[in-house]
Image 1 (cartoon, chains in turn green, cyan, orange, red):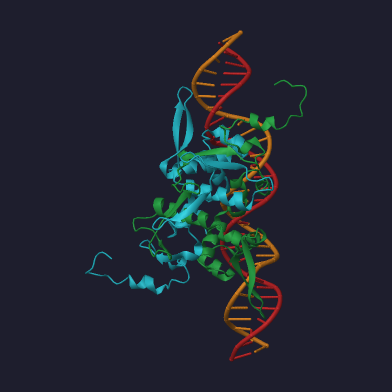
Image 2 (image 1 turned 90 degrees about the vertical axis):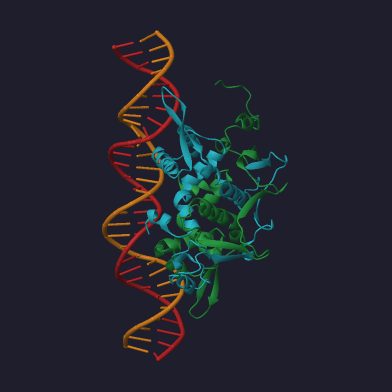
Length: 177
Length: 177
DNA sequence: AGCGTAGGTTCAATAAGGAAACCATCCCCA
DNA sequence: TGGGGATGGTTTCCTTATTGAACCTACGCT
């Protein structure tokens, strides 16, 4: 399957992955949230090759995750800043960091700590239900067909595909199978 | 930079990305949380080629994200199940889904809805501070050097590298921080 | 004129991914 | 005793992506 096909799939994971589902892209975004903004700085910190960095930044701009804004004129220079769409990636980046902290930290402990400015404490991110405020566990979440569901390929296997067929009543003569 | 070097970096994002930072891997994990468990089922749902699927599953097992457990004998067959380490990826997958729902849904709306079994309501995931319970915003989080910090390359640029050197003198008194 | 800086592009060599076919077990059934 | 099907892969060949190194451009400084 080609990657430009991914964004056309009726699956929010596939669509998101078509934007950020690349190793370098995720590292670039990490640095964006650490307030890195310039080509040379990304390149020095990441150790990525320049052609790849240029192509990833171009794609993130095209997808409105980053914006290229001039920071000086006359040698006209741009820096890359997170848009609101990009800032909204924060929970993804934070949960990636947290999983790494918990499961991949060496014996020396986690490389970075996060302090919440509002309360002053060092914290971990916790994901909760917007309706009741309880922490989320995969066992307590039930997935349902949404209005944008189309192909049965991305539905959970426990949702009967038959539901999809009910929506196409155009058949008159029951072709057998 | 080679990808096997990634997991050695003192950065939780790099370490996590070395495990799941691959387009197909993220889609495989999506399906794992939808209770897909068998090779043929992954292959049919994802449209991934068989060699790639085999290599990704092998890697996830090696990294203890999935476990291969027999579901029948006598043709001995295995299925792939999330370990606890794998289940802990749920916040990452959920935040990816949510970003796609918000920013990449077509005009028909989101493909899937999530219902919280505990409260019965359709919900969105929200990330909060474990210390005070407030929703997290990148602007209200301050990053600090942690005990596992080594290379200044992955520190935020606003943390002075000099701090790393202060920890160098071999201290005889004051063993713990 | 010559050097430095920022932000790229070009090019040849290598690694990874894709499509299709093939292989290995084991079971069932005639 | 020899198919045929189910499951879970591997092999092969070809195309695409990534890497590393060098090069380019526009400007400013001395």
